[in-house]
Image 1 (cartoon, rainbow, N blue to C red):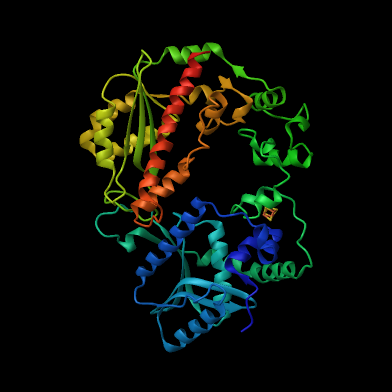
Image 2 (spheres, rainbow, N blue to C red):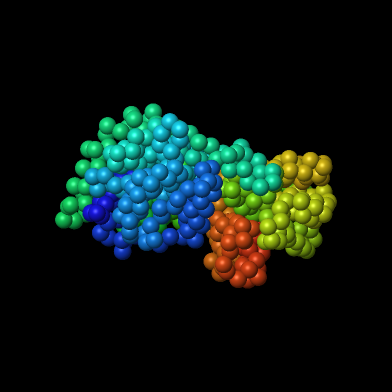
Length: 491
Ligand code: SF4
């Protein structure tokens, strides 16, 4: 059998950008490396797909032995159908050079139904298009599909005992939408095939399509001429305006026309960068600092989430606390450090977290956090989880104060913040001697996916070393808050 030219994913890629399709086929060397967080997302997608097979147990798996041998899977699928097999996983079909590897194909009483599994929590337009190209290859291979559905995670499911796949997954028929999109497919397929016959990559400028519907894996190559700090980093500037400035050859701050419609805060960011200017609203900052009640409890939470809930009483993708760091700063300048990191044994971390947090936060001073909405939301979740701890948790909530406000409101702004008020930008701007760059774990996403793997028992690294790395990372977050406040006090 002749090898396929397009697959479901290259079809979607090609519709997003012709050049991306061409690069994917002929210039893989230009592709960006996968981050550890992206790899964890792919791994999660695979395990969700395997779990969804339990919706229709006892099927035959037609996954090819090699990723490059889908033709064998097409032949095997045909044989299984002829044999009378009623449930097929990774059923593969090929028509007009288009390969469709469908997650689950089931023969119900009224005929064949197709199921495509997604680890997200809703049906998107891209999934409908994705189902349409599957439908195109399957029906043209002679299978009369009665229905085609997206199987996605039901985020309202609450685990109680073993996972109930019929509750965990929602099955949504997309056949009506597929039939609407279907007439456009033959032309789209032939246009993309033409792209692959071109002697060199088609011209395509960078644009909003580089990140929609998916972040393109050739961005590192195509965006290499855009400086790391440019108009694309202007805070709260709509994508349309950013690309408008790009078209006007004004990607560098110095090229932005004087009359360009930016708001005051955006101009402040531009002026700060061009003139190396620091903006400080002394009155507001003095006011903020003088309203703090000591001792100060600088507190930071880390959370993780899993598509398939691990603990009873938790939902898919629910952000669960597993770690905190606490620096207690007394009026006389003395500082204590306390911390919590859940066991990575598979035990629900929440109860121990609550008990130790309540003990460590005993007192009356303000609880200082960076981005209060996050910690407040997690504390409220903990009340729901353990209503008997409502009173002491509510006391902590009532003591919360947000040290992000002076930066969010631009009462303190330096060019090094580059338009951001994230602690990862504010810390090096205010306290250059303290940096995340020396740590093995440098940002929350890595901390979260690392602990998630540990909790699910799929972590392959050095557990002891990694637990130390997690402690170091979270400790720096609250030490950063102590040091940032020191600078604010100095204003
Ligand atoms: S980065 Fe943008 S322009 Fe380049 S291949 Fe990807 S989508 Fe196309």
